[in-house]
Image (cartoon, rainbow, N blue to C red; front, side, top):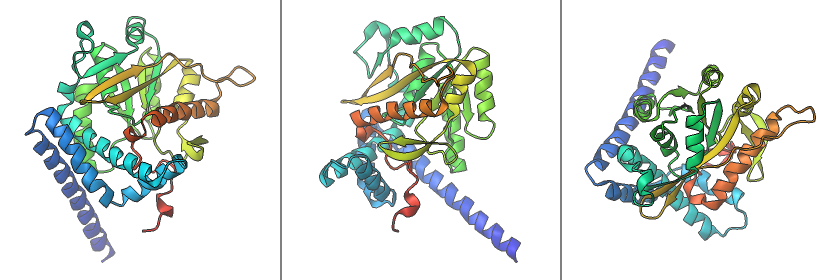
Amino acid sequence: MKILITRIVLALRHFQQWLVAQIAFGFLNFLKLFPADGAMNFADRFVRLIGPKTRRHKLMLVNLRNAFPEKSDAEIEEIALASWGNMGRLAAEYVFLDRLFDFDPERQGEGRIEVSGIPLFIDLKDNPRPFIVFTGHTGNFELLPVAGAAFGLHVTVLFRPPNNPYVAEKVFEFRSARMGHLVPSHAGSSFALARQLESGGGVGVLVDQKFTKGLTTTFFGRDVKTNPLLAKLARQFNCEVYPARCIRLPGNRYRLEIEPRMELPRDERGNLDVRATAQMLNDKVESWVRENPEQWLWYHDRWNIKHTLPR
């Protein structure tokens, strides 16, 4: 009897995941019927409408109040709504990602994309060596590996698949066709990244995700767990580390930035300080988020507080 009940529960769970995936795919297919600008603007307004009606909105507001205690309730609500709009745009931009990246170095300023740090892209491409580029969930972070590929700079990207297996499969297919070699985040992913660095290649990592077994650091003045993987890889291979980000601009435009190499902290013996490096990454992402708070995904449970919220 227990086996039968277990099978029924699993079947219902799989059906729920399948249904959610079909709704998501249906929404994206609907957006394909419209021009890119119209679809992105519609997705922004639509998700602003439904986002505040979800349970995640409560988490978003708590996160924002904790991060910006100096802001009024009206300011917090405004940022939260804009953050929902940012997520709507992210969904629509998946549909049109191939068309969005129109950067032409001979016609800078004329398309949707502008790029800052072009000499760094070119240097990394023309002078191959192991390096790590890191970013956070700001703007449309998916455009960064697309930009790298456009410059002939192919990196191995570490990503965390969505929890829904049906969505995860589609997202992997979509990303791998446009972003080069992808490494899903799991127990063996560090070995794949290490092999890439050992062969003199580049690695791309998102560093602002919750990691329950990570190092204790701070983000917006509150304790968080941070994945030490980037710091450990940098220590092992003594490779260069570069910050990069995407900033949304008015008119459905984007600025992609790669910043100069970071000088990573060392301990008294001259070895790379893993904890201090993890904190430095948090501080960099925090500085980006403070500049454009509406362009970060505040619905993430970065501070692991969702379980403390009233239902």
